[in-house]
Length: 110
Image 1 (cartoon, rainbow, N blue to C red):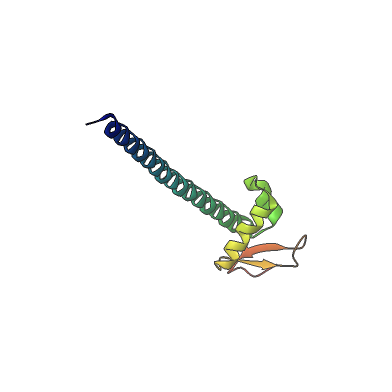
Image 2 (image 1 turned 90 degrees about the horizontal axis):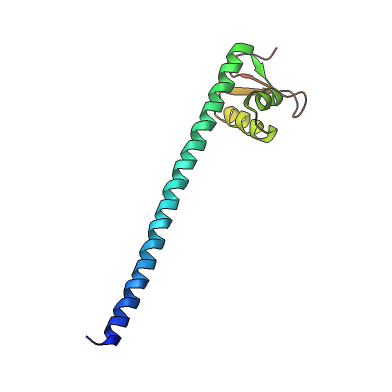
């Protein structure tokens, strides 16, 4: 083999190595993303379970109660309560804002 053949083989090997490395890290990134999404989903379900337990003990809950108890922003608390309402597990009462509160679906509003 001539020097030119060695150079071509070296370049091809280098390019293949770079491509394989990029593919490896792309796959690794996707796996880590799926793990983190699963973690977030699990934490969200735990927060919903906490809200349901709170409601069973106290009969009603507000966005402020959720926000303070879970130490989350009010937007996150609203989203959790909205999800529970959409799932049919809680019912919203009152006007949006200060007068708004949630109860379990089976319990009538006071």
